[in-house]
Length: 85
Image 1: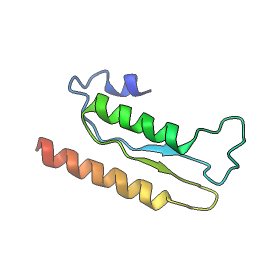
Image 2 (image 1 turned 90 degrees about the vertical axis):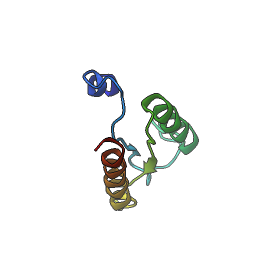
Image 3 (image 1 turned 135 degrees about the horizontal axis):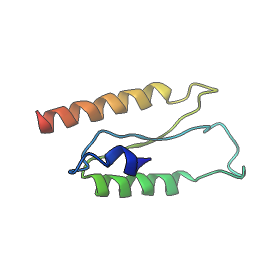
């Protein structure tokens, strides 16, 4: 989906936040991705996009870090606007 998102954006710079959902689940579930792996992927995205892509683990069930995810997205949009306008 990232390729589709950036297909018409030649400089690749755009606000993004990588969100890991279901942080309330037990790590031994089949689809579990560790914080370390996800955070490293966010760093790779940051390098690729020339823009900081934060990684935040959330839980919709418990509401953990959901507000933080939105705040980080707003922060990224503001940084983008400062750099480009």
